[in-house]
Length: 175
Image (cartoon, rainbow, N blue to C red; front, side, top):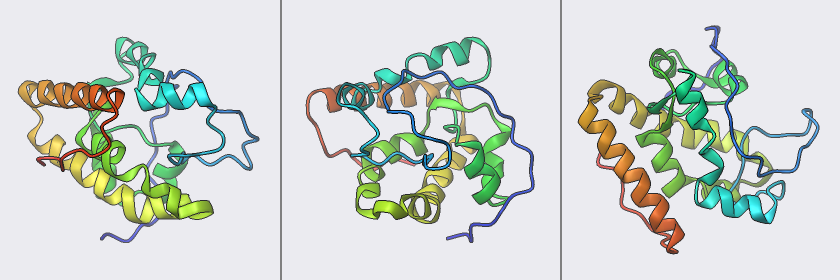
């Protein structure tokens, strides 16, 4: 596991479009990490999040060329600046995406683990979950093809449909 250390690399920031699913908190108390049962998420927002409907406006980001359909999921700028290692920064050399192997694995296997982390969820995320997520995305970057992108879109749709039908356990990623 690489040591998490502060990056001095600049981050290309952009506005990511998303349907509002959470109550707004003051920036001083708001965490950039949202746990599975985060109290800030309102009930209808939880439903939107579970089915990933809240992510549909990101198609505007794709049209604006801020994002791709498939690529490493953008992280909050403060996480990139504060915790990315030089190796992690490799994921920033390609356009960020709506879906990726790392983000899909995070949603299917890791998101609920944040619930057990409690108030320490940011530390747990950057020390335990982020390294795995980024390593899966680096695999994608090294193997990116149109066929791989199509498989990722199909896997993502299968995940969303599975979640809508109540599925709770998903297979490990092939990466």
